[in-house]
Length: 161
Image (cartoon, rainbow, N blue to C red; front, side):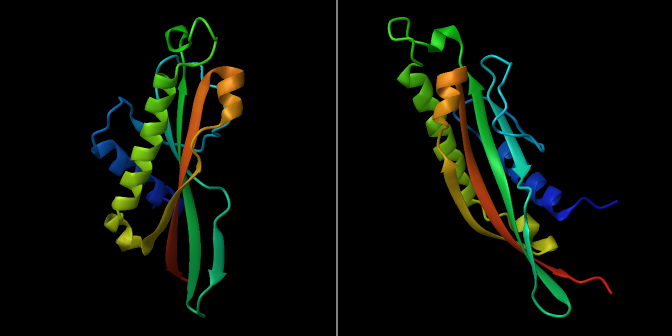
């Protein structure tokens, strides 16, 4: 059985991220995770590649449909005591700066890689943006960094006869 178009796009993004070299150690995983979940694994950076749950689909012609499919790349890290300033009780800026830089680096990479491997399923990269460089509430409530990037693809598919 062939994987769904959403899964194929997410798999291609996951493979591209994992094939690149990054300043911090992590491995991207395709999932259907929620980025507002609290992490329990200390110090490990978690990168989830998640097809967005509401693709837009419309009829292009009598024989084809057009899809706008978004995929989110979520980046999370639960900070340890060593990342927290003992005087202020706040997360150290150096620890936060590293994670913000990782989100920026991922976004830049996901703009440069045009995912030509997806041409076979008719998927064309349209845009990459950062809806959340970081989520403030997660920092305050859980000492957890959460940020995410959104990629949007256009797909054109034949209507089954």
